[in-house]
Length: 195
Image (cartoon, rainbow, N blue to C red):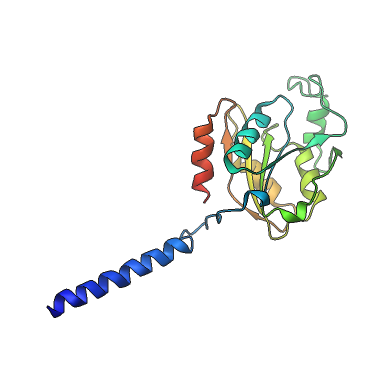
């Protein structure tokens, strides 16, 4: 009888311990994002051809966050993005570490956002320099930045490493590369993996 009683007590203690781990976000080494208030989520993105815009729209739909397009003051033309021409605007910017293309408009109430999903295409293996402009424009201290990108094959890791070198004061997640045809289910699975 005593053995059954102690076994029951032990089972209750273990259950309470496991519940407390779950309630506190578990022992995930990387640290999962808390269930963020949708009003504190910003989905900011830069897109020239619509691929990143589409993925950003799906992320905003899944997270119920606020969508914000990073728009250049001088829009990029198809000629500006011609990869086969080494004299194009985009090539010149990507080859200049100090290039900071001007942005049109601002994010209202940036201080109110805790989580910023940051999207961009991959240009020459890196984020477009306008992303640097965006990151240097605001105070990201205490915020979590979740990068995502679109590309035909280049992964996101190198671009995130470069962006992390900017003094944003933010906590960065590893990020994710999506193809232009990524589905809403794929986006949902990724977002859930962050929580």
